[in-house]
Image 1 (tube, one colour):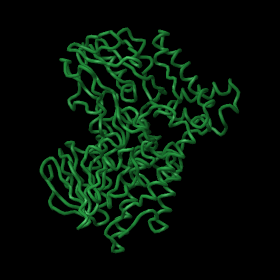
Image 2 (cartoon, rainbow, N blue to C red; image 1 turned 90 degrees about the horizontal axis):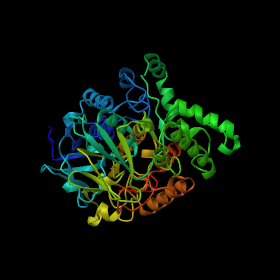
Image 3 (tube, helix red, strand yellow; image 1 turned 30 degrees about the horizontal axis):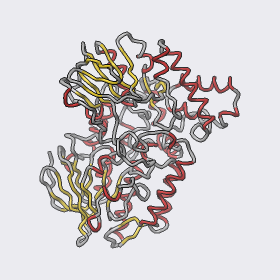
Image 4 (tube, rainbow, N blue to C red; image 1 turned 135 degrees about the vertical axis):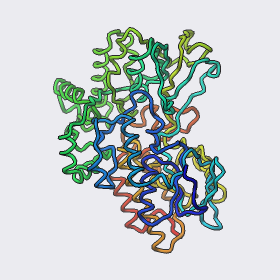
Length: 533
């Protein structure tokens, strides 16, 4: 693995997923010396670790890809509408090869601490392999979904079989043939994995705390003529996507009226059309699904009726029918998820009121014990802040990131944290991040950070640091926007509610285009809200 060639750099980058790779490439382009530390053995970030059966992106391939290099866009050929994990990882590896990125990445190495030295205005970065380097700028490209959430189930150490987590899947894969399998969790990863596991295993028992909404993905091969048509207009296609609330989906039909302005039969037919089309377009049928409880109820009830029509056993269908607001948790896309529960070799166990525990031979809840050969934890991630809070990051006066965020994550623009000069967080809390096409948000952040570093260099400035006043105003803005919607109405990982003890704060900002406008405005006003020294 490439070791750091120097002790000092302009930029140290933590993580080599899509954010870290582009940050490295951009830094080089602008003449900065840069080095990346990565705990995995290769590039790919979340797509390196999430190799569970059925792992797939829910943003179309032609959009979930880099746009910074025109030749790369034109030459890479996608095979499916929604790319699976193996294809996305091949793409990440291709990018690393194409731009010779690996020579500046130290793999199988975790950053353990990063300390700001006020006497030199530089960061001292240390790793678990004993390396210590310094840099003017520290960029955290650690990802929003990079720290798996593994609950401490009672008796977990007693289970005698293997336990797998979807967020840290064995690279050699897992053969479930002839096995009795327990799957704990029915979020996005569980919804993707369960149909494939159940098709392979002798018997699968699903332990569900909260039912989740899911819409058919309607994945299909990406026909060459469709790909060619998009590539013939790629710049215009990308520009149109950048104007969408989530930074993608410009070809999704957008409803133009509120749900209750349509009569019941018209609404049903529209929902039916969108269910048949599949994908996130379902939430765009009407203008107010995430603004009006009454509107949301119409869409939620349609999905519940669909579940009741698919799942033969009425008790199982009832357990699989969500009751929360549709869309307050990330909407899932699936392939045959609800149909899987009609198989004779699958059971669903409701654990919403009774905690799960483990025994030597299986999983228990509410007095019922199920003997299994292996357990799959589809329990998600410590999202957005998990990886950052696992590193000893210390800013001015020894302030730790843990103390700074003890009451929840606070940033300015999701890019910087007062008290931590020259530290940047790509797609950090307070930015649109997980509510967007992540690669679009990543590129926007990397470009902003690179331009900022160049501005400091060109103007003989050493540091940039967000002010507390700007942070306070921004946090209030993020929460005010969220409170106009139904997003905060349920316990989602957007709030950190899936991690016991985590402070509940709505972390992402809703709305990509106005966010980009704000970032540009800040620069035009001389980096308003920051102090440059």
